[in-house]
Structures are given as structure tokens and as C-alpha cells.
Image 1 (cartoon, rainbow, N blue to C red):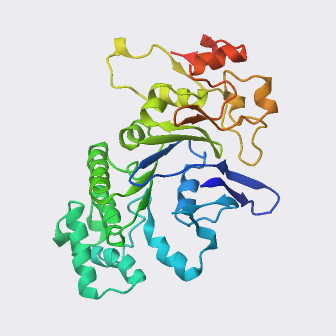
Image 2: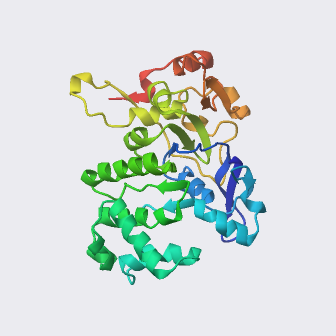
Image 3: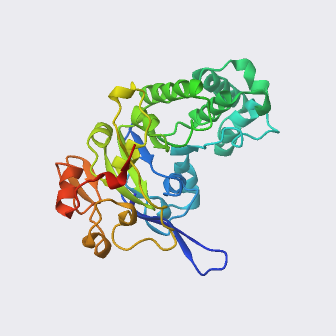
Length: 334
């Protein structure tokens, strides 16, 4: 994606919601690319644009160097099989009037070029591949648990041999006991089939567990992007640090950080985002330059990018010093 923007007009046509407003990134083969951020930051909108469900207002989306917007209808339909999406709600993603076998066969029918017997065989093979019994093929969606439904949603993609799968909050609606099983299934499929994932979530612990790289979104733009370990252990942006500090840690009380970061105020409206840095209205390090100039998207450390005027290799302590606003307890709470 290059300079991707997705804007929506209000019903009266007077306002424009800038859901995504200029993001650049690549997803590498067999990589898990995590995207995190608050609700309303544009995560799911980016995912839907990746699979062609939303048309970009500006910017380009290329697959293997080919710009998708330039493909003809028939060619686009053929290429479309290479990238798929799994939605957040496993219940709504399945047609209650169809048996599981019919749901599994539907994508293959749309693709065409395969007989019913072959489709049934591929559907049953996919069921087994995701850890379900073949007998479930004759059931309806209401007869399955949430975890089983999500496995069905994964299974019906496999016969299409996708190269990229967008996972939009795929475990957020599941019980904690089931999440690990689904995440392990994704890992197994990636190892065996070489699938790349765009993994969208608001749960930092889940994203950190599965991702090779993480992008942090805020108000339609990326604030930070880098290898998972680097982002989680040495964040370059104040927003990333605030997100990390809010994540509960399974540690004894005497080993937990004594304080956490509290961001004041609400996320601004995407209709009229702040000038300069979009995070400046809630940033404890904000200076005059943050309101006057949009921070450049730059590589601060190897393969680790940030959009902050004061981010440096030494991290956020350097940023605070450069801004002339050392950290105080005014923006931290117990």
C-alpha cells in the first residue's frame, strides 16, 4: 500500500470522514503483519481495503507489483482469490439457511471450474485440516459453538489457496480458552501453506504473540511500525508507550510497574483532525512544532519507523528532553 486514503462523505454531503488518511506499508510473503490501535483508528478500514471491499479514495494497492485498480473485471476476479478476509463475528459470517457443507462449497462454486464431487472432497479435507470432524458438514451454523464457527470460516478459504488473509479481530468474540487454539491453527496453516496474515486487533498481547511486525494506528495514520520485539520493548512513539502501559501484565504485584500512562481527553474527530501531529492533543511531550508541522515518517532504527518529531534511537526519554517537557506524574496515575 502506498499513501492509502479512504474517506467517507456524510449523508448530507457536507463533511468528510477521513477514516484512513495516508498510510504506507508492505506485507511480506508468509509474514504476520499486526495492526493495533483504539476503536475508530482505521484498522478494519485498512483491512477491508486490502481485500477490495472498500475502494481507496487515494493511493495505490499493489499485489506482486500489479496495481489492483488497473485490472479488468475478469482478471480482478481471478486475482481476488489470492487475498481473503475472516471477519470478527463468526456467527454473522455464516448463512443460517446453509449447511456447513454448502457454506464450504460456496466459494468454490463462485470460482468455478470444478465438479461437485471434487468440491465436496476439498470441503471435507478442509474441515479435517482445521480440526473438525467430517460429520459436522451436515450441520447448520446454529448447531456449532463460536470456536467451531470460526474454524469453519477458516476452512472455507483453504480450497482457494490464498496468499494473504486479513484477520479482522478474529478471536475477540471467542472465549479465552478457545483463543489459543485458533491462534495455533493460524500458525500451523502459515507454516504449512506459506500464508501471509494482516492481523488486526486491539489486544496487544494477542498481536505480540502472533506478529512478525506491528503497526500502531491513530486517527487514520500510522504512528509507529517495526519488528514486534522492538515495538513492544523499545517503543519510539508516546502513543505506543501509552498503549503498552495499559496492558494488564500477569505478574505478582511487586513486579508490576508502579504507574501507568493515562492519556487525557478523547480521540479527536476524523472529520476535523488536529493540525500537525494528530496525537498532539493527547501527547505529554507535545511542543509548538507538533502543531505547526506534520512529523515525517522516518526510519529511526533498523526497520523501525515512527512519525514523531522527537523520536530517536534512545527512545522517548530523548523525545521528552528534546521537547523540553520532562516526564512528570501529571500524566501518570497509580
